[in-house]
Image (tube, rainbow, N blue to C red; front, side):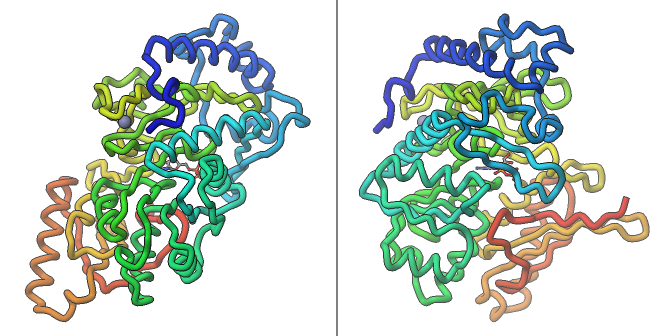
Length: 432
Ligand code: ADP
Ligand code: ZN
């Protein structure tokens, strides 16, 4: 049941000891980077006094902008000779951020993934089709090596090219896939277009959903479409990539691997710790990495801590699904709205198809919000009144979830633009 029972079920006191040991090692590494050396000096922090998770709070958080300002070597703590790989954000929207890995860093990361994959039931008898893009994006290579470590047959197919995906799914009787949730919804349509039933004609049993926010309703829908269990995989390139937090078979929150990361959930305004159940920003410190130590990284991802022991026996803290990012919330008529709230309502309606978007416009100083949603094609053959009732129902449900009343447009399948990568859901065309 466990990949590493001792570490997965470690008691919290021992976990804290282990974290403290690793924090000390991380400080030794941090001192070697020009960014943290300067920071410690400026802030009069003696890194040797940082020895426990609580002590970390003396260090100011690190932001994406800080990482960028350190390009290319500001966060590198080893010689380049020791580095065997780097991952980097694409750099199309500004200076890229770079994470360097020693061989040992990669072994540790791979182990976190093997642990996560084993936890959700993947075994060496599985065939694992990794539908994430290979290359600088961490979802490709990261998960790939985790699958190999377990001993599964890994198909490094990468993202996109749906016809080929389907061909492989069918011919190699793939049992596990790693896929972006919005693409999982689209792909099921394409599978049906090939006269295949994703439930009956494929052999999928485990679906790893990662890389973008998705609601519980979307997970349920994916599970029904494919007749397989779907698990939430959370990670970010600054913290290696996938393998930071992963859902266990109880599917009630994701265990954040605290032997590798120190977790804080902070109120984004006050930067004070949140109580369990209270939504805040995830802040992470890598404590099992040599080449690129990052202390108190502000992920911008919003989640809350789930209290109490997990029936699976793992003691690592559980976090909720990501409810949004501090930067993807939009304000409409003075109300703060996260796209995931809209998704939750839509995906709970069986009539709704697999794609939607939110369009915000401003006309004559008045804002409008329109939710455009694809619905199943058979509904367009029925009575018009029925469609209107559906539209009104969705609108009312959106109102009760978000407290605003958006326009709702029901569209035929495959009319909205699609993406094989992370989906863009909000189109804010308001000129401020
Ligand atoms: P980029 O920053 O270029 O999008 P990353 O792969 O580092 O590339 O993206 C990490 C971000 O993706 C996370 O900070 C989070 O916002 C989002 N993300 C990743 N996995 C999940 C998940 N399971 N649920 C919600 N959001 C996720
Ligand atoms: Zn659990």
